[in-house]
Image 1 (cartoon, rainbow, N blue to C red):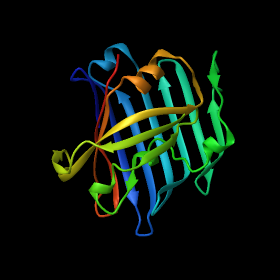
Image 2: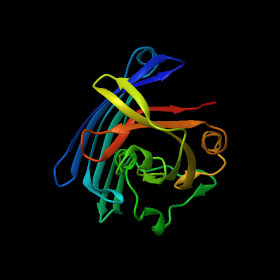
Image 3: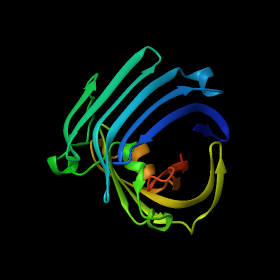
Image 4: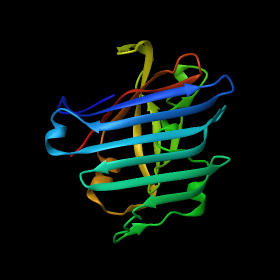
Length: 216
């Protein structure tokens, strides 16, 4: 993936996904500053996610992300049991600010990490946009409510050529965030978000090939 702002590349990400015949999955990835972004920022990181896909979607078992931002290092790991969060470890710990919305036990049930959560299990493309994705990144619990923007259409990029479908996404913060923060409020109330999904081989899983997020 290429991460761009105003058409200028600021970062690049690579993900490798393996799905077995039994629908067990493993995703490994890396992200690094690139292009214009590397002139102002030094960020790099790795990510690993594992789990099993069922008819209702992903059932993650573990998620780990490590990244370096300048001289700062941060790691987040999440362990799951039957799709429910069992343990979260953040190093360094999260700094909770004023008007913090605390996580509740029910918020961490039947949730997926940010990578597993956007890999949608469906019988066909037309079913992808009719659901709400429940995700947790180790700090914040959100819903992404998808709605169809239109029908499937041809899409081509490096490594893929075929049909894809674009969904609009409504960002709904649930807990684990600072209420009233401008960036959160903008994503919640004003940002136009769209995600385009295509088939991951013949696995019955659809993953994003493109995403657009309106910023301030």
